[in-house]
Length: 353
Image (cartoon, rainbow, N blue to C red; front, top):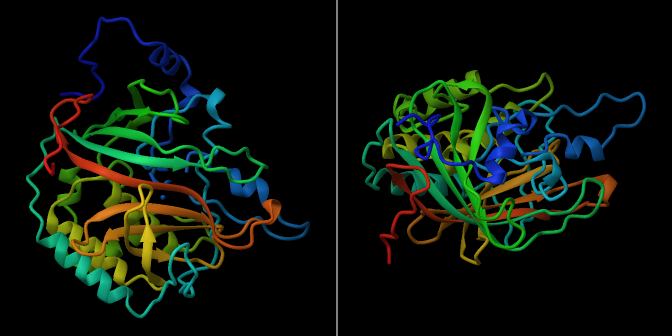
């Protein structure tokens, strides 16, 4: 199936689809920490203007976590996601205080190795090029304005169907949100790219991920080579965030998933949070990295017993314009279902009861 061809071609477009079809400026860029996370690249830069005579903090660009395309009219609502401001080069971050536990570096390697071992033991059937990776999440996002305080919106459902064909394609998938504070609630809308994008690090597919090295050192070397960073950006933080996007938003062979987790072990400054909580209140173990020059920090949360990925939390660590000096939660999610379907728009039955 070609993701650019709608199976309901010939039927009238919905109001949302008509809007999307006529406003190219609403399209998402092809290479932009999902994480929660990232639609509004300028927010932190806008609020953290450096003093005269100083160099402005650089912005990094990263792959978008799957999200519906947002119209300009929804920008205030979409201030949910904040770009990370980075600096320095390969500086390990210190242990940090998290929302529900103290992060420690000493156990991060052991924890990541356990997670990698658990990932290696999971079964994953190969995904065909004509299929879609389906993910259902519960999310809370910042609905505040650019200059105003963070205000977490209501918990709502977010579904995505990401195309697996090698491409290049301009429609990378489809998305739908439902519930209070959802964007375009109930509308199935395309996730588009301004230019055709082939499978790769900016549009990862199962087949592309399966082609990557499973040796963690070789994988990390490849990622440092492929992931772009500005002149003054911390490449460690950029690679850490990109790995989080890949692990969170895709289905991949177990050997590749294990290699990603073991690659994270080798990034300096990665710490473990003994008690982290996802968007629906599930407690687990958190993996995080605090970069001294970054204005935001992400936590990946794993089930304490099964070590399965549960969700994530995103914090603003500092923002002088808002008076933020300690971790302030600006986004959180919980993955409810992650599987493969033959057709976008299809909602699979839950297999776990």
